[in-house]
Amino acid sequence: MTHLRKLMLEELQRRNYSEETIRSYIHAVEDFSRRFDCPPDRLGPRHIREYQAEIFQKRKLASGTVVIRLAALRFFYTKTLRRAWSVADTPYPKRSHRLPAILSQEEVAQLIDAASTAFHRTLLMTLYATGVRNAESTRLKFSDVDSKRMVIHIQGGKGRQDRLCAMAHKRSWTKPLAR
Image (cartoon, rainbow, N blue to C red; front, top):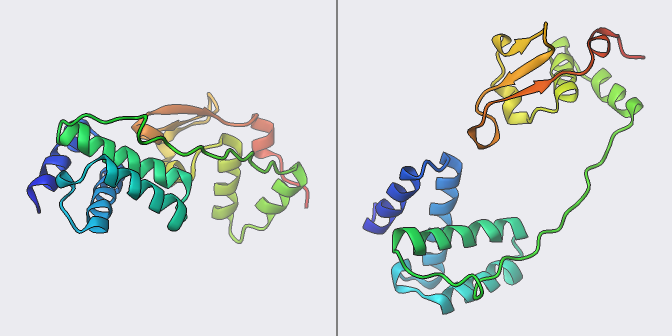
């Protein structure tokens, strides 16, 4: 492990960044360094602008990915190397916002009815009734369900935050779906 990588890793851990963010940031700085075949502390604003243009225009990475890469480089230069960073010289690309597809009640019923087992059916119904994220649903335990209050306690959700999710009305929970 290089000295710079170790310093960056320590700074990320000291600030309690998630493991996924740490992995992404380290990868981004490695990719930047590899692109110019030079240690990143020897590269400057000109290289950052060139890299940004390349990953967005030539490699055609999504705007969200470009934002993460720039955030990683900004972290590396400002927190690890303690250098100045010009936001004006490294603008973030605009993100395109798409509206989610809203399923009709019939489409939801078809989706749930298509489940191959009772377990999968229950999982789909729970996801639909509560709106929990996929990753959050994989960590659910029976003790997280409060059937009297009709809530589910999500532990360590997005941003490592705990929260309560209200379940749909009890009748919709127990009412069999039309087949």
